[in-house]
Image (cartoon, rainbow, N blue to C red; front, side, top):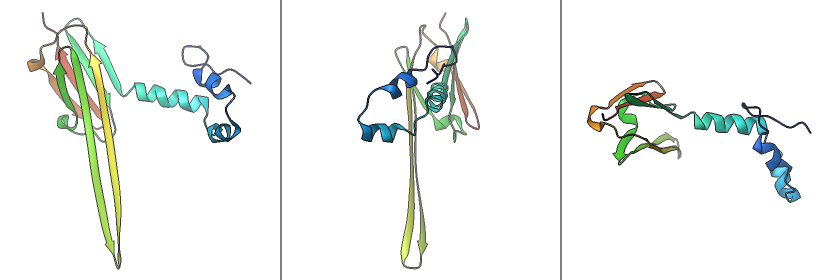
Length: 141
């Protein structure tokens, strides 16, 4: 079997995981797992929050479908840790003849980002476009 490589040319950890001698019933269940798909899934997951630092500020960018307004994500500061949180709950009901069809949607997003340097929280700016939320935090002098 060919060893898969991640974007840095290193062997994919999923390849070794899937080679483990699992019980046959578990191995059958795991058969649908494709190491390339797992690598792509986790790479995308890591890219949900991107933190960049310049000499005078931090930019924290959250890429999350459904985010449209700055208020869609709650950001709080505790010490030098930024806590980001979003929770969505929706319910739809359709009444038909003698029955009701209900669908529920729940989504929870939460991340903590540690910053190396202190920031001026009061001077923060938050911008948002469809699916992209950005927090700019000036550093303290």
